[in-house]
Length: 220
Image (cartoon, rainbow, N blue to C red; front, side, top):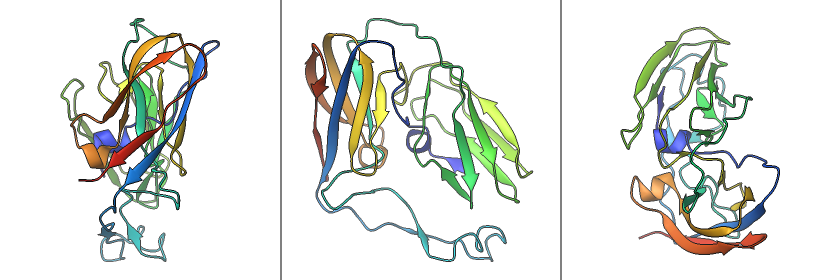
């Protein structure tokens, strides 16, 4: 199963740091997103995938709640972070394959942080990471056994492999970045399907205590 790098390896949330301010906010989608695309999970494709999904399955590109809150948006400090090296957390997050779908849909890691890729299905999956910016090496391997776990990490920063000051919006479009030192930053909200490798929506902010920042992502 291929990993769309900037979608799947986005980042699940900020790391809880000992001190510093919280940046909180909400990302709202403006405009009507395109219809999601059906995914063929029939038994003709795989005898495991079909029975795992009695209801039709579609892509999850635009998850928007009734108030316009957009999920799975990567929000991070694009510039202004002066410290270069941060210790990677010891706990390795898990990217799981369940019912022939990746869970969570968006997750992420810091630079050099170990993360685990697990196959929870009784069928073989192929894992293919495609870093779009070319700063980290592509990898491609098979997971033929249920319960198989492979460990990986990325040594170089990309848009979604970062320092600890990042978050991913929840189902209601809200986010929280913790432990931010006071200072001036450029903060960016990046939605992988909308921006597709281009710059997201940015704001210049000054943090001198807890700070609120909201974003609107407009569909063209």
